[in-house]
Length: 166
Image (cartoon, rainbow, N blue to C red):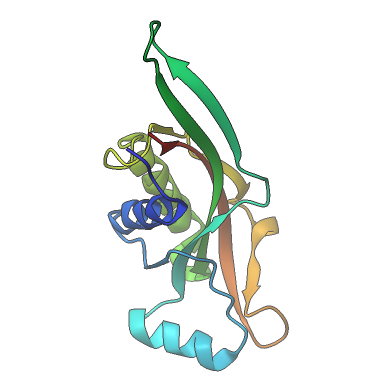
């Protein structure tokens, strides 16, 4: 079965959406550029908390192979994609938001560990790696610049292997 990049991205976002307390999930990287956008997101959820899925800056690569001996071997083509999952969570020091956000990130990791085939869409994925974030050095202003909201930030990396040709 051939799987498209769009199918994989949709499945990753769908898997994220199953995590309790995940906030808003977007299947692409949302570039918040104005306070008006930020306020709109906040009004919709009651807190600035969102996740985005993006293709990592590394190139996908394809492998071609043959299964089985004989006169009619099964040919296939596999693609390996690298995705990044970005999480943002508004700072609330009085309520220990650093710990709350870390717990949410751990639930995200557990959700992907529990479904490595992303609902039988991919051949394999993972393990999901927490590659950036988790401490005060990783906080971000959203939108960047003066007047934004200070957020905890996590960047997770997910490698996915799919069949692109029968």
